[in-house]
Image (cartoon, rainbow over all chains, first blue to last red):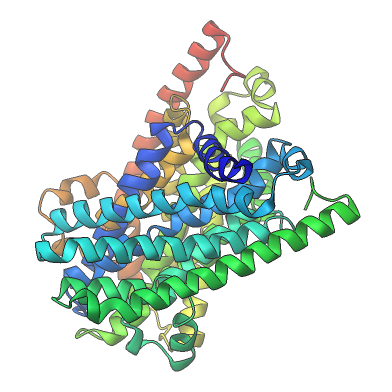
Length: 261
Length: 254
C-alpha cells in the first residue's frame, strides 16, 4: 500500500514542483505554443523542398514534440532534486525505488501525450489536414505509447543525470537527435542505411509511422505491430534507465558524490 | 567608451565560450537543423539550395544564441549578485549591457562556421561565394544588428519573470517569419510587413545574396538602420528599467 502511495502521490508532487507549481507562464509558451511553430516551420520547409504533404510534418512534429516534456521532465527528476538539495533525503528513505522513480514517470507520460494531442489537433487545424474521425482513437493510443517510449528514454537520461553535470544540454542533444533520426521530417527511406538502423531502435520512429498510417486510413490491426514495437522500445529504455539510476545511486553513496556530478 | 565596449565584448565572448549550453546552442543545434534541411532539400523535388540551407541554419543559430543570451542577460547578473555593482558604476548601464548582448550574437558566428563546415564535409555543399568581400562585411553587420535587437529584448525581458520560457516561444516564430530557411514568398502575405522590422530578415538577405548572387547593399543598409533604431529603443527601455528599479528598490529581486 505504501508503494502505491509513493507511486501516485510522490509522482504527482514531483511533477507539480517541476513546472514551478505548474506556472502557466512556463507551461503555455514552452509546451503549447512552441510545438505549433515547430510544425509550421517544417510544413513550410517541406513545401519549399516539395518533399512530403503537410500532414506528414504535422504528425511527425506533433508526436516528436512529446520529447520536450518527457525528456526534460525525467532528466530534471534527478537534476532538480540535486539543485534543491533534496536528492539525499529522497534516497535515504526506505521507499522502494521502483514506485519512487516509475511513479514520477506516470504524470510525465500523461503530459507528453497531452502535448502531442494538443499539437496534433491545433497544428492540424491551422495547417488544414484531413484525418478521418474514426482514426482519432487509435491515433490517441499510438501517441500515448510514443510518449511512454520517450519517457523510458527520459529515465535513461535521468540516470545519466546522476553522473553528468549539464543535464539540460544532454536533453537538448537527445531532442535534436530524435528530430533527425525519428523520421519526423525526413522519410526514413531517404536517410543513409546506418541512420535507418539507429532510427529503428529509438522512440517515436514506429509511433510516428503508426499515426501516419492510421491517418491515411489504416485500421488498428494494421498499426498494431508498430505500436507494439514502440511500447517494447519504451520498456527496454525504461529498464535500462532504472538500472542506470540504481547503479548511479550505488556509486553516489559509495563515493559520497550524490550532490555533485 | 570604445574601450569599455571592446573589453566588455571580449570578456563576455570568452565567458560565453566556456558555457557548454551556449556552445550547444551555437554549434550542435544549427547542425541538427542544417542536417534535416539538407536531407529535405536533397530528397525533395527541388534539389539544390544546400548552401542556402547551410547559411539559413547558421543564422538560426545566431538568433538562438542572441535570444537566450539577451533574454538571460539581466537575470544572470542578478543571480551572480553583480547587477547592483553594474548599475552603481559610473559608466552608463546601457554601455555595460550592450557588449553583453552583442557578444551573445557574436557567439552565433560559430553557427555559420559549423553549418558551412558540416555541409561541405558531409553533404558536399559548394562553398563558392559570389561576393566574398561583401559576405565578410555583411556577416559582422548582421551580428551587430542582432546584438542590438538583443539589447531591446534584454531590457523588455526584465519585466517578465519567466524570460527563458518566453525565449522558447520566440525562437521558432522568428526563424519562420524572417525567412531563414523558407522563402518569404511562401508565407502568408500578412507576415511580410512583420519581417521588415526584424534585422534577421535583412541580414539573411544580405548574407545570402553575397553568397549566392544578388543585391547585398540594401540588406546591409537596412541592418544598419534597424540597428540604430534598436539602440535608441534599448536606451529608452534600459533607462526606464534602471529608474524604476532604483525607485522601487527591486534591483536584486527576481
